[in-house]
Image (cartoon, rainbow, N blue to C red):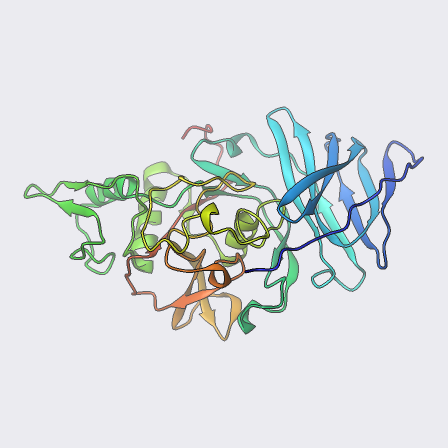
Length: 354
């Protein structure tokens, strides 16, 4: 069983400070981390602390333009109240990931209008924990660190068979290397008239190669006029951890029934709870291609013999389902536990429903 992360309860001390900049000491321990928050939009902010699988409210910070906080090391969540609902931003202050000055800087930015979609989740800009926080992972998961990641949109679910046959019908000519078309695990079929159908519309499409996933993204970009792509490893891990920086998409403690893991069977998408960003099946179900190659274990490699998959699958257990776990495979591999999900750029000015 994975050992849960536990952080001590924190005591809020009163503070007298100018409204434009509040400095709040929160339960100083044998070591203090520093959180600097820029809030130019003057949104009302609150702070919560992660305790195991729980996210507990800690303090109302107000709407000052800047905040300076001294806190006990741990994982925190900043919440900003906007006209469109709460915005949750990760604020991980883990000792083994913080920079030398033990300071984390977070800028709170309201989401753009085109961030609000039913099929894509908005992942806000800000810090993310990348790598093995427990010290039990593979060498290529180290060192654990905190990186800033720009905002992006990520599909709430893995691409389904129903979505994939729309692509196949639209492109007409298919490449034999995109999927294992002759496999029983590829649950789409073409009739004598060339029309594609599926008897399992809600299952994630699997047996898809990297080329097949990229072809789908390119088609969706052409169809919508908005760039769609595979997420990078860093984007994927930030999204999977959610605002609480969890070890698994659903929490810090491995729970067999919390996702489709160890079941031996692919299941329909969105049958388990969504994570803190509103994403389903980031842990388990099907492995997901990322845009990064695995080259000497480095992140952001453009080329390499292997490509990186994330998220684990329905046949694996806890060790291989952590958000930091990196699976490498040859790009042409097409197995029954490999699928993908799509990222969407935020640079267009179209309506939220397009």
